[in-house]
Image (spheres, rainbow, N blue to C red):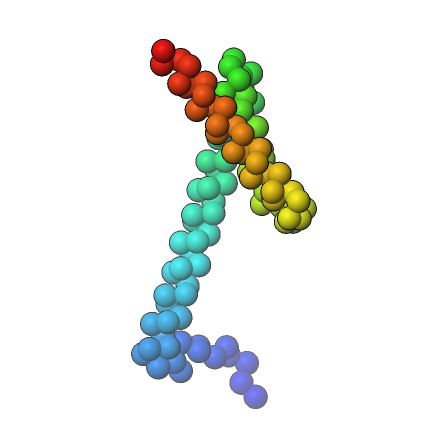
Length: 105
């Protein structure tokens, strides 16, 4: 009986080896992207926690962020919650647009 590990890459066809390498690199890229996204979220959250909002639109942006985080959870999968999330985010967008139009006058 042989105790040495078998190098499966030696046994793959050229096409199989290429497909395996693509999967390996894709996974590394995905992991790097996930880490970068996590770091950006941490930085954004630190900025949002650093100072209180001074305007309603600034507070709404923080609330939108939290609602979108909630929207990714399993609990938010309930169709009633999805509908409420869509409506609240729509309300924020509409009210912020109104606020921006009022500032232009």
